[in-house]
Each structure stands twice: as C-alpha cells, then as structure tokens.
View 1 (cartoon, rainbow, N blue to C red):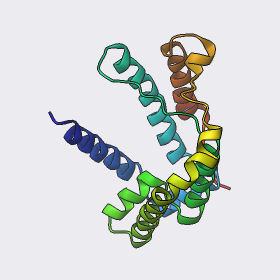
View 2: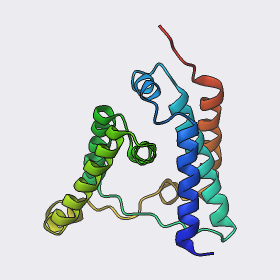
View 3: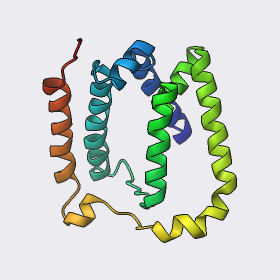
Length: 176
C-alpha cells in the first residue's frame, strides 16, 4: 500500500479520535487551559504513551525507521512559545484546528489559515535565518538514548507506563 495513503488513513483515524474525544469542544479546551477538565490532557498523555512505546516496538521489529531531527535550541524555544500562545489565543493546537476546520468551525478555519500563512512566511525567511540563528544553536540529533547510552526501549517502556498511570489513575477533573 502507498505510504502516503497509509499516512492519510492514520491522519484520518487520529482526527476521528480527536473529534470523538471532544478535543475541538470550546468548553473542553477552556476547561483544559484552566486545568479543570483533564479529559484532553488524558487523551494527549494516552496518545503519547501508546505512541512512544509503539514506535520503539515497531522500530525494534524493523517496521519503522526512527529519524531523529536535530535539536535547534532557538527553534525549540520559539516553536514552543508560538505553540503555547497560539493554543491559548485560538483555543486550538495544530491537530485540533484541522479537525475543527473539517467540522466547519469558522474560528478553526481562520486558525488553520493563520498557521499556513505563518508556515509560508517561515519558509520564505528560513534561508536568511539559517546561518545566523539556526546553525549556531544546532546540537544535532540528541536523544536520551544517546546521552544515557542505553537502548531506547528501556526509556520508552517506563515513560509510557508512567504517562498511562498518571492519565488513568492520578489526573482528576476539578469543578469548583
């Protein structure tokens, strides 16, 4: 089966899970940002826990290819700030704004258009930023696996179990 088709189908399944999980619900998003409604956080922690363990198991079985991107410090800082501010202002993260757009939510459509405009702008200024801001802060493909010198599955397994434990047994909704 074509790799693009597989990616498309996985993306559709992910979008369906976000939709069914209420990740595009304004009430849920505000509750999450106020740390009162833990449902979206639990959904994200479950996805990260299952995904982390799954990708390492697939890689060990030769069914996936781990490709670690270089750690660009300024890119990580700026990207994290843009992501956090964008989520707080728009109420959507990149995945949920696509799902919200598919639902026909006007605010999600404008958020998606803004994200695409930002990506276009970044692609246009990237060549001038690369030599001055990006390359000097490039630390290469840094992983806990390489830093600790152990097989990644021994990091992924306890990390995944810890996330799943917190998601299912620790996080509780707060309704004041």
